[in-house]
Image (cartoon, rainbow, N blue to C red):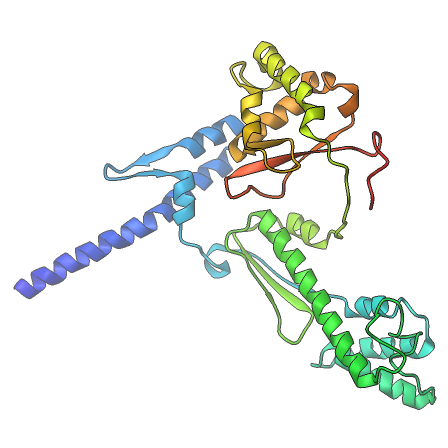
Amino acid sequence: MQGKGLITIVAIVLGLICLNELLPTWYTSKIESQIEAAKGNEKEIKRIKEDTLNLGYTKLYYSKAKDKEMKLGLDLKGGINVLLEINQRDLVNDLTNYSTNPVLIEALNKTDEAQKNSTKSYIDNFFEQFDAVNKAKGTNLKLADPELFGNTNLSEIKYNTTDEQVKSIIKRRIDLSVGTAFEVIRTRIDKLGAIQPNVQRVPGTARISVEMPGMKDIDKVKKMLQTSAKLQFWEVQQIPEIAPYFQTLTTMVAAKGDSMGVAKNVNFMNLLQLDKLRTNGVANVKLSDTAAVNKILNSKVGQALRPANIKYTQFMWGYKPEATSLMIWYCMQSEVTSTKKLR
């Protein structure tokens, strides 16, 4: 009898532990269902997110429960599964500086056909097809030829570099390019806010497998992943140039906050936390305060108050919060006010 009682107690304890572990997942699901139902009503969504579940021995907040919920995979939660493939023909063309050499073009065309029924990598097939075409035409072209890989794009390849050495260099360059694409894709997926995405390279290929549990917006994901990367350089304006405008906005919010989308008691200057500024930005703003800052800046009153030196300035947020959970706010001169933007 004592043994049965002990088993019962252990079962009850284990059951309570399981319920406690599952509680955040249940609560998160409940709140997100309510948020979905209130879609479009920002005030109601804010109220739902701030709601708490009081269990007596503990309180659950949505943000806290979200951190502790069980991370479900595609099989349980659904989501998006994508297999991306880097166009290696484009990579080869880039490495040859887009050569129009007929042997190269024919080898590339034959490689495209061979890939349809081959398990080998694209670059291995390319080298095989190049050797075959080169031999059939009797051209005796070396891979280090200036019309092929011996160009300014590949300074490590000299006129006397052997074909085997060139092949090794090209394979390494291809692998680096795929690795760069992988990092870009992983960064973009992190920006999408997917919960525990699984991004990995498929060994021996130029393919990247992406799993995003819980993601439903296919069009948004496609647009994010297919957008071409573009590097831009901007001249950054400093706080002394912007500070007078911030002071004016602070005064105006106290007088006309309602017409700027925020309460009159909001202190705009306090939101910017200038005392914590350690970068080229013009402010450090809590993630929760970014919406209020955007409303003030983009309001008709805020736009009308802009002085001439920042009339066309673009304010941009940093990519993600710093370790202190603050978003850096940058002030970029536009092309209208500056010719120093480079592409």
